[in-house]
Length: 96
Image (cartoon, rainbow, N blue to C red; front, side):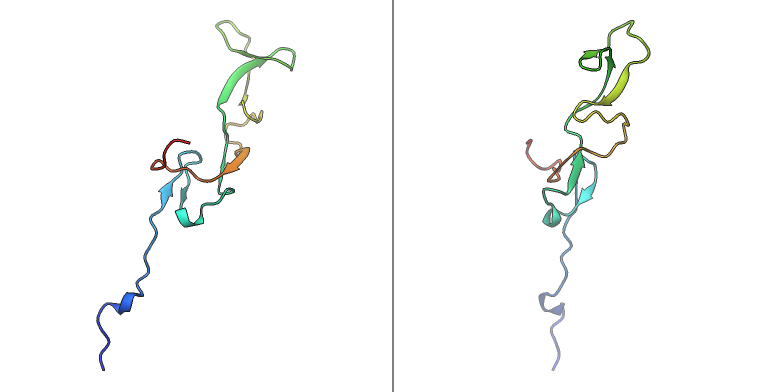
């Protein structure tokens, strides 16, 4: 007896990967969890620290010792790992 051509529905359907707009990683939606995406929820800023308690926007003529850091966590390396985790958010998803 001959089996029908086509494998009887056992074809493996590959899930289309998406690109996260926060961490820029590709991911499979079926494996997206609250711990999947690591990112900074704020911007990398440049401000001076004059008394270590207040931060000011840099202005023309500010001293060259202005600090650069993530506003959310204070990390000074622009390539620092994110300080927050959440679900990946693709460019196809509505704004959060």
